[in-house]
Figure 1: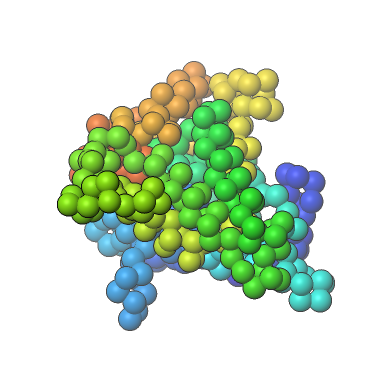
Figure 2: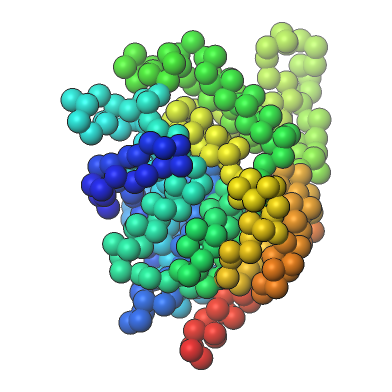
Length: 370
């Protein structure tokens, strides 16, 4: 969908003449009360479920969660997936032409965007679709931050918020991981100050390292040990390789993930989205008080965390729970003892999926009695 009117951004800049790519699943009911907004994390998109015709490898990133008969049942709910501004999967981003610039692409000049800016753009999309109120907004990780922000920016438009494996802000350690990944990109000789498009190159080396760093933080130590351990690619070749060769299976896995990522993800998008993660902190405007920040929310909440997720630990979700309870909000909380680390929110754990299934059944039942 194209939007010509300027969207004011938190940075003080604005963006106009932009597109938002989105997909919908299920059917919007007569009173337009069954809409669910799904917000994506760093490297995902608007394609949240199902596969494209003739493309069997195109499964949506949250296909375990969304679809007919699944926890978010598209036979009962109208699900909307939106690709965020600045991303590289269809919505206007750094690789697109800047309006009025004679065909010159944005590149490094794409404006800084925040979680709050994304929520405002999503609200505009809902306006265009004729949807006043969401039955629920949901997301994991960075998507969970967007879901939380929805309840603060547009409290009258959200009945339920499902926040999975997320946090009220990033810890210093998380910001540090993001900065190391960004430095890997900007110091790649092919980055060219963010204007690598004009040079016909891609800073693949930096993207590979950024993805490898990120992937390490998404997995738990137990999963890495169980999946790879200290297994060698060639046990008979020990000490026969140079220091730059791949000897351990975990090395091979990380390089594979890095290579794959560098082929499809945009470097400037990576910088923009990780910065948006760093900036998010609703308590900042309230003297650091999360209780005061969340007083504005009126939605009912489901929060889910995973015990082995050390990047967005259960402690951070419990901070949200405590602040919401202080404000006498309706909160459900589940802490799942899953072994998969941060990636658990994308995987098929029956306990996790059953919690979400039960919660959305409650949402549907509430709607049927209104």
